Image 1 (tube, rainbow, N blue to C red):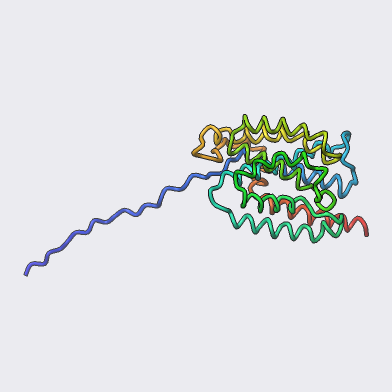
Image 2 (image 1 turned 60 degrees about the horizontal axis):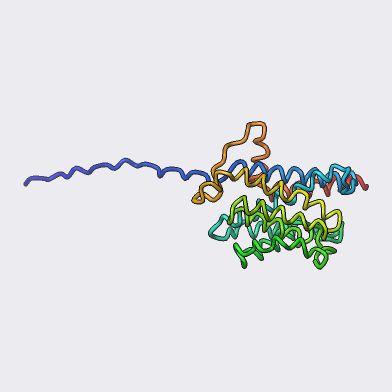
Length: 259
């Protein structure tokens, strides 16, 4: 009786190729810059009691809100599916921060404005872009007294990011320039935010240039920043964590200085 032996070809096990990262380090750096400027602004306001005036450092830190909000709109419009993890992280961060912020200032902090815009975007999607005109209705905005950053201005900035992603930098540059007409309708200190809307738009357009050139890669690969800017990139990767942490540290220092 012949025993027939079958040779089995051993298949070489190979790991699937690693998916290239869709993150753009330049966008992360800009988000890190926005968070850093926010921290400087909070230190100046909460601990040093510096008002928002054209002659104070807090004028320069106004760049942070348009920059962060435009990035939010740009990245939201780049996704084909909803990032529910990020959505609920924003919900929790908003609730945690406002436990302290509202008690201290009787207003809700900017994360609440961003949460509202995020929620509205989930309904309107690319049509959120039409809200770039919201700044013109600042005088009729009921959120001015309750929100630290009124919804009309935050919506305008988020809409700029949506326009940048959906229609490109040229259209976004035009709408950003048109928004400057809103300077006549917005009262200080909120009006200072509009000074930085167009520069922030162009910064995001520059950082995402490769993504805009190739619509198949909506975020763009981007080039890695210099090593001395690596801390900005890391900060931009974990914006809510850093933002939440700095608030609790500043409130703790503020309480210690009062005792």
